[in-house]
Amino acid sequence: MRSNVSPGWSWLSRLFRRSPYLPPFRPDPQPLAPFEQALDEGLLIARHGVTLAVRNRLIVRALKENEAFDDAATARIVDEELQRAAEEQRENAEGAQALHAVAGRSGGIADHAHDYHRIDTATLERRERLYLALEESLEASRNDPDFIAAMSERARDDAWKDIGDNVVSRLNQSMVSAADEPDYVLYRPDRIRQLLEVDLASLLPREDPDASDR
Image (tube, rainbow, N blue to C red; front, side, top):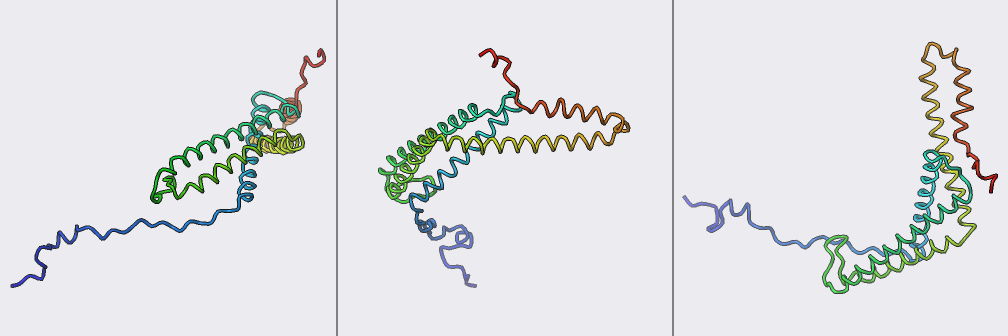
């Protein structure tokens, strides 16, 4: 009886033989947003990050260090966070410049998002320009008193809201647990007095005792 299997190709060899080579799929490059639009969006994100950083520092100062939300201290924190954000953008620009130098000596097409070649040099150059423009804008904001004041107020309002929400949540939990106690009505006046004279008073800014001597 003759076999239907072709000579030289067993069922096992057909199972493990290599498939025809298919090049990796590479989507068509998408058009870049206009430079000014990218700058505006990047600046919006950077400034939002600065506001969050300032808010967090104000909360720590108020709750852990018992420091007041005075204008001078808040403005100083805003300036420090703007400087830090500007330095971050400068570091990003230096990184893009280094990638641009390497990509300029490499031909071919990238196999993944971080594999840069000569074809990507224009994109990397644009990215470097964008980072430098962001750094310049953030540095300019440090010299704008109106901008500093507006960001200080926004961060301060956010910090107060977060602290207030936290206080209300703690009070609600305390009231629920206290209401379950059998002597709740008896000690209720003392609890209210402690709330007004101790808990809420501790959130108010304290005056510097040495201020009168200056």
